[in-house]
Image 1: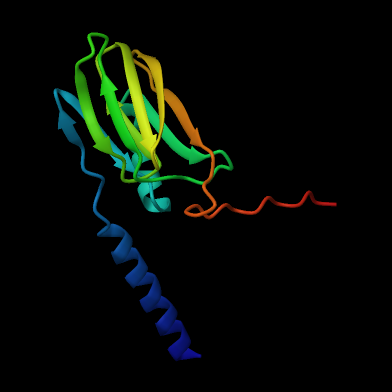
Image 2: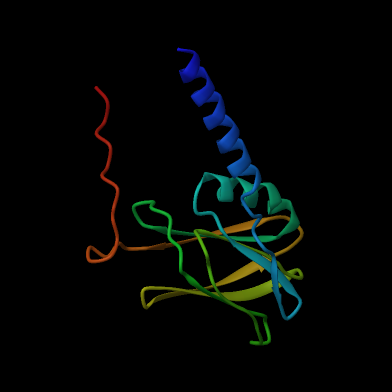
Length: 148
């Protein structure tokens, strides 16, 4: 019994150290625009959520069924058509700090593109990009049965 307690304590210490040493998401910059992407795993998602106040645009990438996606191409152009950001998202969340204005946001997942105009200001603007699943590459979570 005493050995079980020590093993439990050692596991808790190891888990705490591992979480403390998880590297923070790195903020990148292109053409004066700061951005970060990620969100794979609970820790990464929580770190990004804690930093949302630093940004004014949040993009979320999912399948129509709700599964999060990564490796989504992101391109942001200003009203004059100049490309400000070209990036492949490391996870389902992409945050950017842009000057107030209207932008064209183009995203690409498995060769399927979505383009839309987005206006940002001082507060956080969230845009959701959803793609239909591809049975050859996507694992779709089963729908839950209604509880009786």
